[in-house]
Structure formats: C-alpha cells, structure tokens
Image (cartoon, rainbow, N blue to C red; front, side):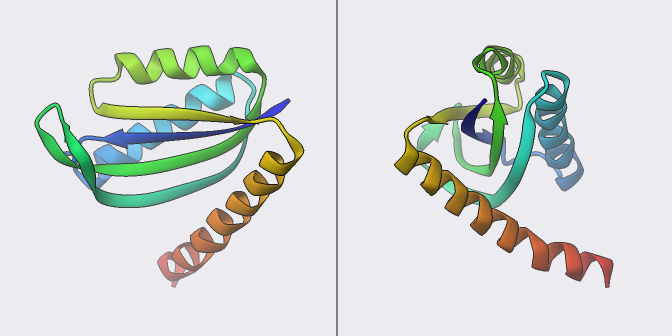
Length: 122
C-alpha cells in the first residue's frame, strides 16, 4: 500500500450541507475501493490563484489515505465527472523522506480536527 494525498476544491456557491455531501461522496469512493482513510483536513473557503470556471474562490479539502494504485484511477474518474468539483490534485508519497512528511501532515490534520470535534459536541 502506498500513501496518497488528494486535494480537491468544490464550488463556493454550495451550502455547508452540499459541501459536506460532496466530501462524503469522495470518502465513500475511497472506502468502496478499499482505501484506508487516515486523516481529513478541511481547509475551508479560500481564494484561488486564478479563476476556474468563473470562480475566484473555492472550498478546499485534503484527504490523506493509504491505498493501492488502482484506487486512484477510480477516485479521479469520480472527481472528473462531478460537476461541483472545480479542481483536484493527487500526490503519491513513496520515498522514506516523503512518507515521514506524510506522517507529519496526517498528525497535523488530526490535531487540527480534534478541537473542532470537541467544540461541536459541547
């Protein structure tokens, strides 16, 4: 199994529920294909470097997971046909240094996610 990171950006015109359902769709594809989701980093609404489909902003989400290479084809196929996703990028971590960096990113994403989860429960 290799380590991967997929960043995708959804349209800024979506409501919070629609954004959550788009993220859930992508996670479902990963679980159906047998990938192990390690962390999720919701970066929120951000300005794009250049307009994409007349959008200047987008909602960024990063998924960190471990999977076989064949999973990527199916994931990217789903991202391409989803009209709400305006951009996506998948990065593979294969060398030891890269995997160490992947572990750091996962730890940071999990650390950032924990306070949000606690505040929602309260």
